Length: 277
Image 1 (tube, rainbow, N blue to C red):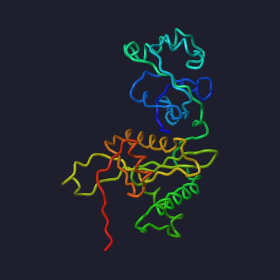
Image 2: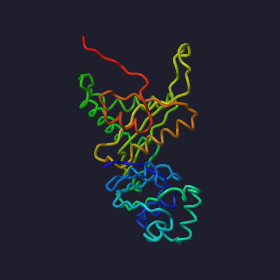
Image 3: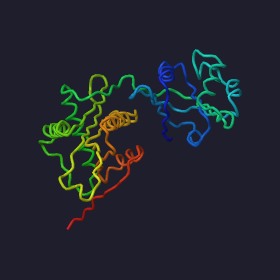
Image 4: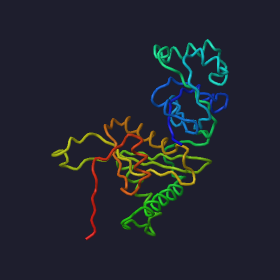
C-alpha cells in the first residue's frame, strides 16, 4: 500500500465528505498510472487550507475517452447533481487538448476519514498542558531511537521545555499552531524567524529563513494527515513573512521524521558528525 495526494476544489470536497461522490476521474499520467487498488489518496481542498478527505482505492478503470467514461459509470458517482454534458464540458475546460490525446482513469474509492473533527489554530494558553504532554511524548520518542544514549528526559523537562519553546516563538517573530480534536491538542508545530549572528554575512548570503523548531502528532492519532496540515500551515506563515528558505534540525536516528521531511521537499545541507573518545 502506498499513499498519494491530489488537490480538489471545494465542491468536490463537499461531495466527498457527504459521501455522494465515490469516483475520482483523472487524466492518465505518471502518478495516476502508479496508483493501484488498495492505495490511499489524501484529497486536499485547495480552496480551504487544512481541509482534506482520505480515501482507499477499491477499483481502477482506464478508458480511452470521456464518452466511454460516461457510458461505464453513473454521473452521480463522479459529479453529483450534474449531467453528462456538464461533466464533459468541465473536463474539456480543465484538460483542454490533453483530453483528446490521453486515456482517462476512474478511481472508485471508499471513504476513510476527513478533517471535519480537526481544527488547526494558533496557540492558546488553555492548551498549555496538552502542549507539555506532546513535547514529553516527542522527547520520549527521541530517547527510544537515540543510539548514543545522550538524550535525557530531565525531571524538569515537562514544566520548563514548553515555556522555553513558546518564549522563543514570541521573541523571534514565530508561530505555534495546534491541531485540535474534541477540545484537545493532539499535534503541534512551532517555528520562528531567527536573526543571524553579527558576522554571518562574511561567508553566507543570509537569506531570510524560517526555522521549524518542534513538530509532533501524538502516536495515538496517526495516518490522518495531521502532520501535513501543520507543516503546510507553518510554510504558509513563513511565505507570508517573505522567507526564502525553511530550515529544520532532524535527529539523525529519527528515520520517521527524515522520511516525512524528504516527502515534503526538504533535503540535508549540513550533517553533524559525532565520535565517542
